[in-house]
Image 1: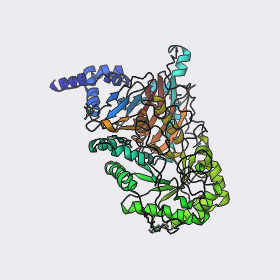
Image 2: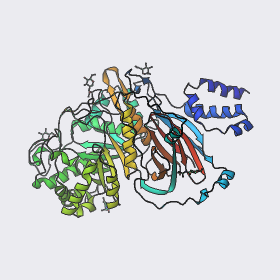
Image 3: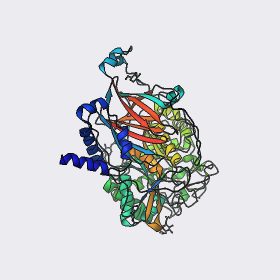
Image 4: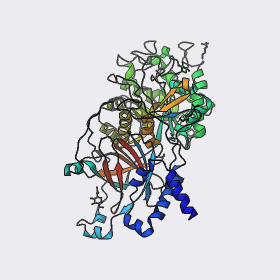
Length: 600
Ligand SMILES: *[C@@H]1O[C@H](CO)[C@@H](O)[C@H](O)[C@H]1NC(C)=O
Ligand SMILES: *[C@@H]1O[C@H](CO)[C@@H](O)[C@H](O)[C@H]1NC(C)=O
Ligand SMILES: *[C@@H]1O[C@H](CO)[C@@H](O)[C@H](O)[C@H]1NC(C)=O
Ligand SMILES: *[C@@H]1O[C@H](CO)[C@@H](O)[C@H](O)[C@H]1NC(C)=O
Ligand SMILES: *[C@@H]1O[C@H](CO)[C@@H](O)[C@H](O)[C@H]1NC(C)=O
């Protein structure tokens, strides 16, 4: 009885949101009565407290702006944490974040089985559902977009939930085919720019530690990918490269890393590596070479590489890999220059180098490819293009035409998110054309578009929703990894030497020695935390009038991880068949993101 009393006490101590958790547990009331209500509750309480109490909740700050969600505040003494739970066999665990203020809230459930009688009465023999052929194609998983919402809108969607139409619009059915597998996941991460590191270094030691563990630690998002600029980019205090003088020295005799590497980027990378739960794979990209290699002798503007420096620029990449290796930071992949279109179009104001497709093909085939693959760093991946979706076909076709060998030297193709108004089917088409190459998403941020009146929007749930939509879309079109842009920025979205300010998942308030986690931080976490490297995406089919944004992967241990997003202002009921006779039921609150891990 003492023991039971203890359970009941712990039940009482569960914070208010526990009611919600309890209500989503699909408890078979008939069974409950047999076993005894109190005993069952006791077990549930143990589950909730023992499993749940490990986490520090979000220290929520309501900005008091209509239409905005909360942000979570961290400082030198406090920061929210999230631990992953291994669901027992036949059960699942759900992590929920909502516009209304939940952040990774845990709940639990059991897999249900279609009863024998039901199965018998069913005119269709459920067990006979054939596994479809692997068709790696859209629209197997198409979702109608909800009506567009602006940042502060407040429309009241008056819908009768009880009507037949309401039912049709609120109930979604998915069928998962765990044996139909697609790409293997590399991971998720963010970028160590000078701006990110400057902001991080502006915090006290203890707050810096909370920052690093929030992203990389076992109680954080467990990021396992990082992108780092080779020398400066726009998110630097000023432009710089590693071989500025002497001019026209093709031997790079004076190549040297900068103080930004030694005091900002490398320390941040090393702190991340120290707490990481898996190897952090680092992708590096050049924005602009030393200006003397360029046709316009400037860091920005319309310019290509001078042909006499094609080899020097390849060597520049190898020298960077060597210098980072000397301080024990291994480079996993390099891209063939950040956004090569920027040195061709007239309106870009920051560090760039233009490549026409045929030039990029020649340089990769004749210089960069052989230089890397004949070096002792021959296992470094070369990821080509590193630009927007719609440019991939143009670049790859031009490269292949000018220098077919360039395709052999390329291990993968990198894509940025600023062209995501073009359809993701482009990615699947690329994957079909180059099935041996990986697709890697290397840059994304909110607030960069000309129509974004505000660069940084505090507490924007809409921006979290856009991130989730974009990651789901990319994963469903064969992308293996997803790297966000700046790990942190200041409250204005900087520093940036050309004032190209944007939003970030973490904003640093140096004066208060605190940082805030935007909803975007949790959007990233719904994938990064729960989809480990080595997981395989599997096939999903929707069988309802309207869909729900989703992706399903299978971990190496056989568990299924399902990420779902409901961007509507209406609750959605989701039934997910994980086999012919077993299913789970999930209630999606309005404007919510859920990650479900199922142990089947
Ligand atoms: C850190 O944040 C916690 C929780 O919000 C707060 O109680 C504490 O006073 C803060 N500490 C400092 C040093 O500001
Ligand atoms: C070599 O580079 C450093 C900066 O890294 C610069 O201060 C120095 O002047 C350069 N040496 C020559 C000979 O250009
Ligand atoms: C890569 O280089 C190592 C030596 O550093 C060599 O043993 C290996 O065969 C090379 N691999 C390829 C694919 O060239
Ligand atoms: C660091 O904090 C100081 C104020 O404490 C501020 O003036 C400076 O701009 C901050 N640095 C960055 C990179 O935001
Ligand atoms: C899911 O299984 C149920 C039986 O439990 C069946 O009626 C339904 O059609 C299945 N849905 C899908 C999408 O396969």
